[in-house]
Length: 316
Image 1 (cartoon, rainbow, N blue to C red):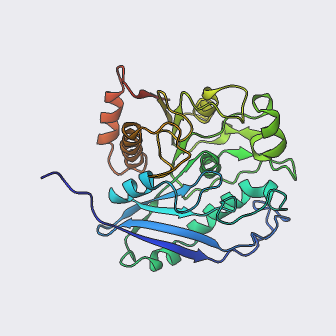
Image 2: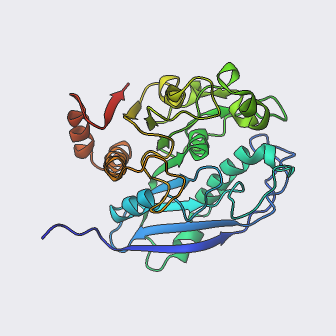
């Protein structure tokens, strides 16, 4: 009989009150109130102790209901997966001319920190989870806009359009990251639309992103945000300091074969084999980077040592 994945308990929405941020240098004195409570989904194995945590930031417009192929897989293999719904979610209907819009990137980072500050509340809201979290092993992951959000917790710096400053908003509680199809360099690499409408993409600084991370990029992920082509999404690997790995997926577009959902209409390159590979590689990396067990990551590196039909794995 094949081994069965363990049962998963998933609770949504868990609601965290989101008052205006305190006026500190790190969080911005004039950041407007969030205006909506933070809704969170938690998925966890039904059994086991000392469970590591993955905090997942969705792509622009998605919500806590997205990315089941990743969240469910990680939870079934021993991780507690926490998914906040950020202000840009279509489920919240924030208009483009809303005064909060230029700071969506910062609200996302605040959401992630609020989740980390509220682990006691989240733990208590999931039946049977109390006392089973390993808070010393926390990773941040994200897709697209969510990859930048996770990257900020790893040390990526974004120049605030209000102040012109690029502050350090990293979080020492986060020990590793997984960045999927994430934005690269700004400046002349952006299209006029992106430069005008998405201020958080204008001046990213990857030079301080020192936390270990796995970057995943599709070699056909040609986005309307950049004039460079698909290699733009490899910048978080190329431009960041060492301790990084890059999985380049052959033939993959922005949703990398279907990671955003089981029936997500936006997936233009549906490929279950590619999604299964991402599931296995990310799990192996998370277990390695969080100091749980490196054997699967070592085996993954060996599997990619020669030509591989689905992609290429580089490390530095």
